[in-house]
Image (cartoon, rainbow, N blue to C red):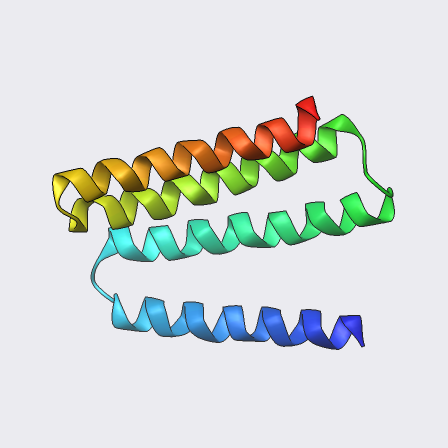
Length: 110
């Protein structure tokens, strides 16, 4: 049953990504963003699977999971913040930093 949900999720990601690339055709920056985010998400799924198989995983798997989630957080903040007023953009970045710091604390310090 779990594999069916994984396949369904990956199918939804592929469909959504194809739609995003289609709608962004001609905008190389947006297409690159979609493809980079997809690559990071796929790597994150692989790392999370390894993390679950290792029952808590080693520090290298934790580091990879943290790095990928931090990368994705920064990528999405970099796309959202410019669309906001300056005060809200600062809040978006502050939340991104807090999320990355919280993940670091949860994985490595607690």
